[in-house]
Length: 132
Image (cartoon, rainbow, N blue to C red):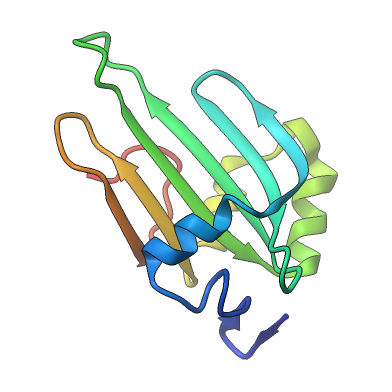
């Protein structure tokens, strides 16, 4: 599944950020932990290599003009980390997810208010919410 600090395969975490973002569309959903209108947390798996990851979507409502900022992160997980999040279920702790992303590369897709979409590999500083 991963070697050393490298998670996933060429389809999911070893390609360009844009290609990884596109590949994520084909991932299998293993669980939906949080399903609120402005926060969605899911455990997904790559269909090619089985790499598990946590997907976090947040939307920051500003009640101004309808162009609300949206942030989406895809963080690769070890099997143990995945099981830990699954065990927490709907009570999953956002700070735990942020801590797992503190020293690991993850995919970040941002739709900031009034700015163009950004798709990038980020490392450290995973935040569930705004990134600006």
